[in-house]
Image (tube, rainbow over all chains, first blue to last red):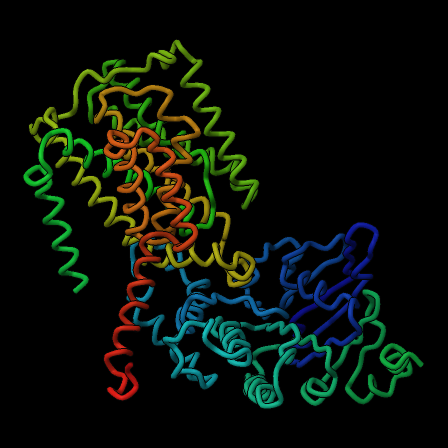
Amino acid sequence: MIALELKGLDKSFGGLRVTRDVDLAIEAGERRLIIGPNGAGKTTLFNLIAGEIRPDRGTLALFGADITRVPSRRRAHLGLARTYQIITLFAKDTLLHNVMLSLLGLSPLRWNPWARLHGNHALRQQARACLAEIGLAHLGDRPLAQTSYGERRRVEIAMALAQRPRLLLLDEPFAGLSIDERRDVQKLLSAIPRSVTIVMIEHDMDVALDYAERISVMHFGEVVVEGTREEVVAHPRTREIYLGV
Amino acid sequence: MKRGALGLGLLVLAAVPFWVGGIYYVNIVSQILISAIFALSLNVLVGYAGLISLGHAGLFGFAAYGTAILLAAGVGHLGAITGALVLTLAASALFAVLALRTTGIGFIMITLAIGQILWGLAYRWIGLTNGDNGITAASRPAPFGLSLASATSFYYATLVVFLATTVAMAVFARSALGAALKGTRDQPRRMTALGYDVWMIRFLACLFSGFWSGVAGILFLYYNQFISPHALALSASAEALLMVISGGAGTLAGPVAGAVLVVIMKSVASAYIERWNFALGAIFVLIVLFMPEGLVPGTVRLTRRGWGVLRRRAAAPVGSRR
């Protein structure tokens, strides 16, 4: 089963072609790493997959269903979740409220103008369980603004996982983390079951390399090398792009 | 303690005609309550949705004119009020579709334009609105046979509607949809990625806000038994916005406090201070300087800090005091 399939995806911003004819096929359960230097078009590719921007050409399919014209919010309901390179959460609200908003997003309760959100015990319990999974249950009632950057990154991943996605997009989950925090996030990511397919962008090869099974290298909007970890590391183009030799 | 304060507040409001000292002041409290309903309705957009509207007096006036025109056409009070509210909802929907094409400055400009168009219609469409002369409503309604002709009875009717508004706002703000709306204010992009229909949530907020603006407008019509284009002017929209922002956007008590401040300055202080506009402006400057989040949240913050200082002093060992 192919979890995500991109065919001939093209996107230009004005005269700049940020995505050039990208083909990508990711197996269900796979851990795929997308690397490439700054400006290679990695985040744009994520925005195309998540539906925040529309491709100029090409198609996207999620578990065999064409989603090229499906709006971003519907893709969440089809099992796609993502994290952002720059954490965008609800800073004034508690950790619990953050996770509850994530759960609410897929629940019909979100249209209810009178039922108290925090009066919903099932949702509260579920949110508490999600926080417990990432080891932050004790901080549930603390405003997000009063937590560390590493904790926020974990909350963000917990919010994505709370939606029980089939495909998870992680945009530089290790960026800006200390060594200890990296270990925590790494532990969290390796505990994710194989029922979730993961595509990760990472700038820093060291942390991400031992996590991914297959790697795609992007350069100037194109996928230039693709293969297993060993193949990609040994490929002369990878060396050329990263080392400039 | 919060419940006690709430009960006390209710008692004070219910007893207004007995302690306030005269019909003139009862009427001023009625004006405050009508303004508070209007400010609360605007607060749904400004405080919870993060959308600043400068055309809300248009909706307020639309409902007032709607009722007055229907009454003049011979429709009964209940029919006129219901009809005006339905029309106001329809107008809110239309304006929301236009204004929600953008957010931020764009939203402000479109709502400003819509408000000005409505003002222009009230002023110039003389065949329908009687232009500058306005429309008179011959009588007030008498729900359940209770006449609202006197200042006191009208005050109680306004109080009931005000309490209903407050309850509706409190329930909405804590509801699932209310939480979603605040989410679209803080992180619209994230909310979309989480599966929310940001546009539809904002649209519903516009309808909810428009409905209560209409309620305030109808009360305003019956209070004055008269409506003129003046009520739709840009200055009326700006005044409502000032109430919300000075009191504290995104809170329940804030817009009410803002309404108290503005109406008292306008009606009471203007009798003593000729340049009351100047005084009101000075107060707003002080609020912005010392309580940028608004009177209510600002007072809570300063009180808490004051208590903290006192408590720390009390807890400090005797030797450390000078």
